[in-house]
Image (cartoon, rainbow, N blue to C red; front, side, top):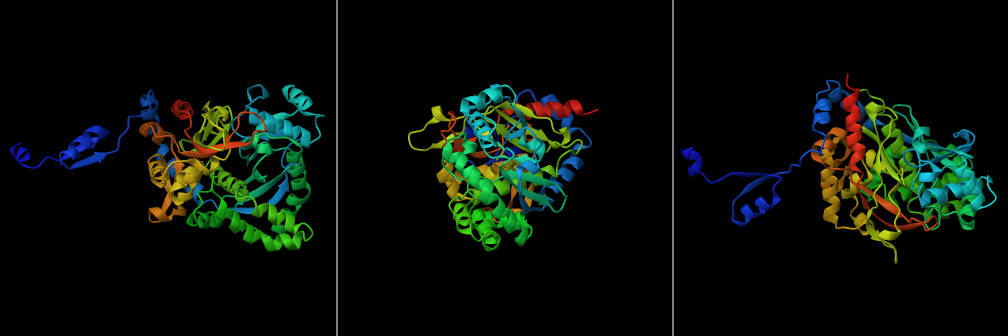
Length: 459
């Protein structure tokens, strides 16, 4: 005891920032330890799940499959070849017409008009309310869709195959910016563009990929991260790399339409996003259905609910209310104009890019708000709730450290940290389009209810 009193004090501060600052102001050296209490009400479930003897090995197996996936773009197919008759896909967990938000309703109306299933918007709304078509989540059909995520038979899909584990995933083609179906617009210019994509863009890309053969998306995404993309809200480098791969083959496959096709891709920095989403879906699907695993394999929003799926719990959705993103707004728009969070594009964060890779993309802060240091802090914090670092997706600014990947429900509960998601913001009113971009927190309920289900599943 005397030696302890004679020596200089050694102070460890745990979760007490104010105390740490006060001691440092008095020139007392401290060792701060980041600590947060677990999420309220989770202690019993958390203890039960952590004690599950299957958990460690199950998570190692699941995350190893996720990071070893090798998604390749192998084709572009018309959705009618993938969908069943009388089915429309949508983003997020299951939703009914009655609970659908403005952008979701607008996109569904637009799809009805595109497919000539209604005379006008009012007829389309009436038919949708009466159940004229079945609404199914994209995730239930190995598909993902940005924003409203609506897919109808005459749309074309990127087809991505995981060469390591054999899975296949799909995503619609990106329409570009402005008035677009995914933000709930369905005016004549929207339908005209979609019909051009059906008649020209889809066939041209399909023909091009027959000539190029499979394109390694894992390699392309790794390169894009080195070039300043984070692969959710910034895809400029990835789109450029994909255009380089496709351009000669597009000219060969569709010489009369090549200029229009290449100009369309060149004018849309987000064109790669949809291919990247399908790649992320293929990778996370490889980690599904591992008994005892607490790994999150899907996060998705439908504009009303935010839902997650967990490897060890099959296809069950665990949901909470979708929040309104906090960020930068375009023009005169503000938070009152914003729809709650929407889209399947959070599959990017689920696979270790997007918000989890913001440290690789300093320019992203000009789009979603904040400072470069905030982007670095966001990425660093995600290492606390993930099971691995991605071996291929590396961040130059962090010494080429792999991106944090493999969200673990138990780590979310233990730390109280929620996944970082950056996102576009859709207007509440159908047809408004994008009103901003920012960051959004998933609802705590989605993770606590999944943790409870994991605890209940232990025999």
